[in-house]
Length: 272
Image (cartoon, rainbow, N blue to C red; front, side, top):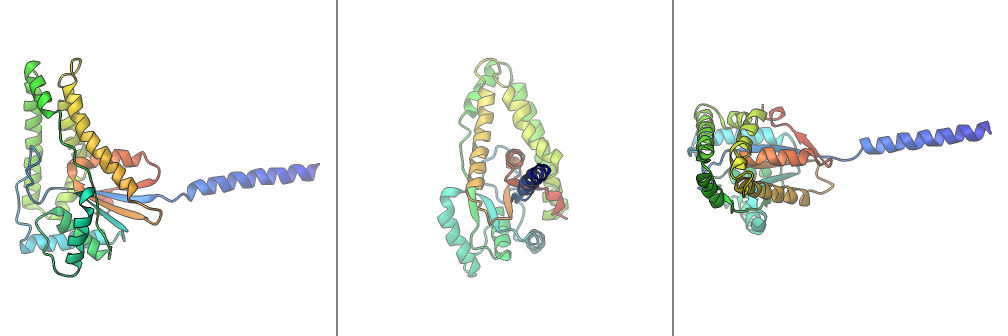
């Protein structure tokens, strides 16, 4: 009887240890989120950074330094802010670039994304964006006017312009790596997201919620991007780098942090 109890206790202990080991050994994909400035002015954002000469010898050297640092991660995928519907054309351009037949345009998608993927010897640069227009913006503006809430939009503009002015100054006086390190600080990510949550979401509250609906447009786009990220990662991917406009990063980071298939790599641990 004692023997049976001993064996039973051993089996229970073995199962507990095995189960615990299995949980600890579960594969997680490391993902590094790099929030960027837009190198070109696409004129799709209400508040835009001034352009810089990213073709200058100084900036090209800085881009080489940045991508050399990022390539040390040995990432298996590089994801960029380009619509997933454009994957085929993106593949064609990247293949031409690998052959030396495509000059990189002034875009962080190519200047960082393509350049980095080539150094990592990747066959593809993944497109994961999904554009949804801010369809509720006009209603939000009209609601703000009707409800004497234009001060919210004025305060929003003041904060957004101060943030852009700050980024401009950092770009003027620092390297690209230093700028990216700065704008990916937690307080700078929060600063960007607060524009939506502190000002826009309040417009029309208790009535038509036009502000909340406008913010939901932004969240919908980022949720779609998140869906594309998950859909394009497979079991072999140990490390992924995502290169996106800085405004997307706080939401994407929150979503990925709450998915136990991923392990967030903090930007400041890499951008040194």
